Image (cartoon, rainbow, N blue to C red; front, side, top):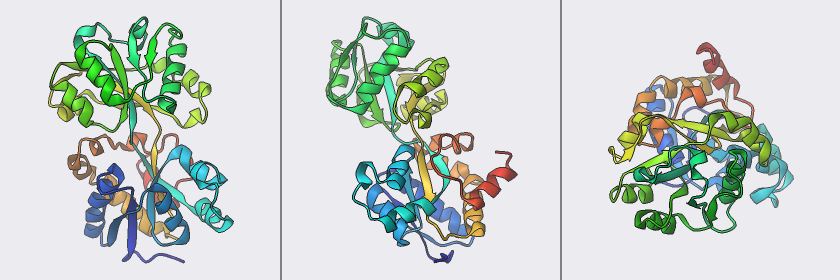
Length: 307
């Protein structure tokens, strides 16, 4: 049925997740706009199922995984037809940054670009992990495929080896700041290594569902602030990943979503102050690589802003 703007429920993954924190800030902004919104935790899959049933109104999900929900693949293979129908009625309000693939090295390693990893020992994540497979694709499209000693190893151990000088660089897939990277930065100066932006089109064509992947720009100011200057940032960094969509279930009216979208973006500085990871929420990226249609209420606001 049609939701009443007095009883909206925002479902986050957990009380420590970025989307839950966004929901908490957003609920305060909504209240100032005359809309009451409660924030709960359900996890992604359970949250999606509750949204499809009309038990919650807003939920976050990774862009490629929304396609799994609609198509009955991945973690949604056992979902009945009525849930799939509910997923198809959902619309997106915005995309936000979530976990991102960050490549980190010591500042004294001499490694400044992705191609500088040639001949180096590099951690590529846990054995069998998707991030490791994608990292090997990146080596190939940067012209250094087969010329990097990729080590399948969990992040904590890779960073320990980086600190000991037995690893040259490592992948860490996480939000920013990350506690493991932060702890390592207290032992030595670090820097992030970015993929060559000119490789994005080839990158997307080289991986499954690649059209939904992005090279996310992380302003140097955000890096310096998140790690209190312990990570060198002479320029902006770029991490690969995919958007995390904030979805709204079917039945939420256009005016309510318009007012909520406006309340968020016109007070975005309050969101940025909530955490270092939320400081990366940017309207310029909000509509990039989404896998669902934009809700008419959100689309109305973005159109007013020329997006």
